[in-house]
Structures are given as C-alpha cells and as structure tokens.
Amino acid sequence: MRFGVLTGGGDCPGLNAAVRAVVYRAARAGHESVGFLDGWKGVRDGQSRPLRPSDLVDAVTRGGTILGSSRTNPFAKPEDADRALATLDRLGIDVLVAIGGDDTLSAARELHRRGRRVVGVPKTMDNDVGGTDWTFGFDSASTVAMDAVGRLRDTAASHHRVVLLEVMGRHAGWVALATGLAAAADATLLPEEPYDEPRLLARVRAAVAARGYALVVVSEGVDLGQAAGTAAAHDEFGHELLRERGVGATLARRIEAATGIESRSAQIGHIQRGGPPTLFDRLLATRLGAAAVDLALAGRFGEVAVLRGEEVRGVPFDDALRETKRVPPAWRDLLHTFEAE
Ligand code: F6P
Image (cartoon, rainbow, N blue to C red; front, side, top):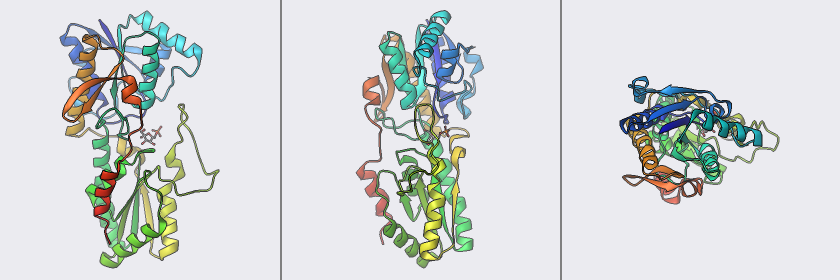
C-alpha cells in the first residue's frame, strides 16, 4: 500500500514524532509513505514528497512539522474537493493519515464519507479534542508556559507588581489550568468560568499584601465582556484569532486602575508552540502514529487513534469529534483549592 500523511492546523511539538511513527510502522509492514506539504493545501494543490524512515531518524526530537502545516479547508469550495480527490488518485494513495485537531479531522471525516480510506491522529496544544484523554503538544506547550511564570515571578517580586501571563488555548482552558496549577499562580482565569472581577481583585490584593506581588494566568479565550467591534481576525475555518483581543493587557490595565498596584502583562503566543517536545508528547505522538497505521492495516478506516486511560485504541471519527473537551468541574475545583483566601 501507499500511505499519504499530512499535518494540518496549528503546529505543535510532537507532530514530527507522529509522522516518523507512521512512516516507520508502514515501512516495517512493507508499505511506502508520501508526505503532503502544508496540510490539506498539499493535497489540494498536489504538493508532496516521498518519506522514508531514513528521512526521519531523529525527527522525534524536533518541534514544528517537517511537512509544514496550514489551516486550509479542502472542502471550502467544490472545485477544491475535486482537486484533492484527483491528487489522491494521481499519486495512488491507498490510505491517508490525517494528523490534526478538530478542523483537520473534520475534513478527514468528510473525505472518508466520500469513500476514501482515511485514518486520523489527534493533536493540539489546546488539548480540546473530545475523543481522547490527552493530545500531544499540550504537555510541551504547558511546560513552556509554566517556565514563563517562573521567570515572571522573579521580576514581579523585584518590582512589587502584579504580572499577568496570557496563554493560548482557544475556548478550552487546559493550558491555563496546567500552568496556573504547576506554577502556583495566585489566580488562574479559564474560559470555562464566568469572569469574576471582584474575586480576581481580592486574590490580587491578598497576594500583594502577603508577599508584595501577584501572578495571574489568563487564558486567551476568557470573555471579559469587551465591547463588540474590538479587533477580531479569523482563520479559514472561521475561528476568531483570540490573541488579537489581548485579554492579558486589558486585565493588567483594569487591575492597575482598580487597585493602584503597578501591573504588567506578557503574552508568549507562539513561543508555546515551538521547541522540542517533552518526553510525554514524544511517547504519545509515537504511539498514536503507529496505532493509526495499525488501524489501517486492520482495515479499520474512518477511525482515529486515541488515548483512553493507559490504552491507545481506535474510535470512529464521529466519536472523536463529538464535542470540544473543556476543563471539567473536578479540575477547576482542584485549581481553586490553592486559591483559598
Ligand atoms: O489551536 C491551536 C492554537 O495555538 C490556539 O491555542 C490559538 O488560539 C491558535 O492556534 C492560534 O492560531 P494561529 O497560529 O493561526 O495564530
């Protein structure tokens, strides 16, 4: 068989590990692999490269994606879908392995519905794909953010300031939750909870009174009730680019105005998405990439390799994509255990 593989959507550490696992696992079973460049764009435009194990020997150690990525929707226009299908036919692709988040996997499901053999691998630093316990990229991104809070602690303490760190995560607060918990922030704001300004100000005042500074982690997706009409760029799948709203900077201004305590904010943006994957992400990506090939070899097309507990297994696209996974009450309760007055 000839396997095609693509990485779509926002990049994250672990993508190369997953691609490597696909190519090695397929090669071990006697099959060859082709990589599509820049996600669905490469399928639509017919841009690909052969992939051999020797091309990927140490790819597990590297961040980003050697295949490139994009937020291209191959079903945006009927003619785009026709071109994508024609590419698969022309290159003789027997199975396509789509590695991506909700958007990329939704396009993969559509391709499967149109009769193609497709399997999926979930990834995203947001950790919000419903069908899997964890996605690779999340651990690496949260580790970077945790380290950033440690650095901000030094400067916040020196200047007796309130310092906010805005982290990515779109409409799920997993990165903020992990960062706030692991870096001992004084307050952590998640999109899953309504914004409570009096509570935030009380937390900040208490921390400054206790030790002279305060650290706040805020997810980019928190709704501060900003006026409509503030900057709102969108990607090709129609998602608002939340960092443009600048919730961290807005909050810093509000806190300073309300408390009189000098406040600063930092936005680490795409720094969270780069760099080598953590051990956890390397292992998870490797397991899921290999499992996707195993699903295909077993004829289980239309499935996504996911992590449930300790086990990697296949579930139908519909199960994997049923819902956006948000931070549930038990995790939020644990977070707030450390924010007691
Ligand atoms: O979905 C992953 C993610 O990193 C989000 O956390 C963030 O909101 C978005 O992508 C940023 O997208 P872009 O890289 O297109 O600016």
